[in-house]
Image (cartoon, rainbow, N blue to C red; front, top):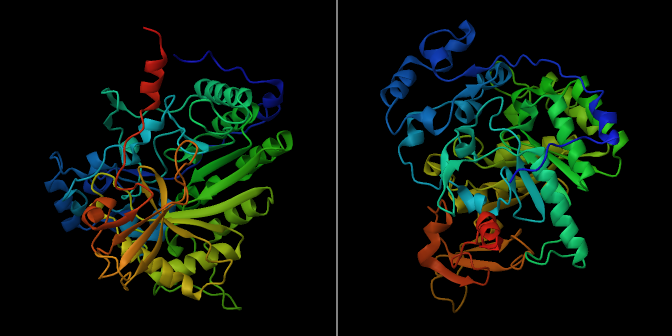
Length: 479
């Protein structure tokens, strides 16, 4: 049942009544047709060669149609960066290889099992909101390909429907009800054992494609509901940094002035240093007189405007993707460059088990080695990022990979891998627990270790699905 229409308070209106909504000219190219029909701007038409287009057209309309798996989309700004970067081309450029193997989960991580109301995931101690189902451009390896492509998902209760977008009245009602139950039960929820829902992440899709008024409406409503910190997940600093203009920043400032008690965290998504650093005609990074790499001017202006507001915490996270950033040197430059401007390095991820993941994922042990090698040249404050792989139970760190056997432990003769639970659903009963498996250098997902489990106190290979939030609600309704 949907909540009643949401009515902003007077405090909210002190923010909402002063929001500007400029139009942003991202010069987006949607789909392959602009390249096929030569309607794209002349300087952009060569982004795909004729042979590349021919290969994509041969599978159009078949089960291997790449646009059915993930729509093609790119901004002018990103094209300008990618034209001189093979890594960035791989990030947004469609290829027939994407659909050679369509193995993968239609709902990675069984996310919908943790959706008490449409568009809200409440898996950990925080909530995640799908507030929009698109971005300014589309990464081919997107973890949310099922949302971006608007695919039907089979849910645990047997229904089949697309993932829905969160609505303010429903989310606010849920947050208030959950937190009231927590407060009445001595600080933990009587059923799930969770504490107060303190933090919410606006995600999607990319929330920065929404107008400022809608973002402000989310910020103020969540603040009124008692949320202590708001995260905004975005790749717009890479796709269209001019979105971080005076109108957006003034809205943020007014929100902070009105709700100074609410923390604000900007979660950026830079995958490669080519997304922010200027390059010369030979493909090398331009350096200033002190030998530091020079940023793309639009990107630096936007980043400086954000980090100069000391009340905004900025953190970057990125998957390690084949052909994009599976390079220790690139990751070292990325981590060092971001930390130099006060952006923390939060997580690097192994690829998820999305549909067609075998076209994008780097082997788990290779990803660990790449990140480990990249951090050998970094200082202690530059190398905070950990390597995480999202199991159905929650975020799991790839903590160690060794070529050495564990004496007396059969199956470890060729070395071993250590996984450690970082974030676990509900009251996090398994946080910190470990799993040790025998090495498999070709492993792309947990399934590839099923025959080499050596020790599993974490229960990664003995997983039982939680009863979904929807099924719990149905069970609670009197017959």
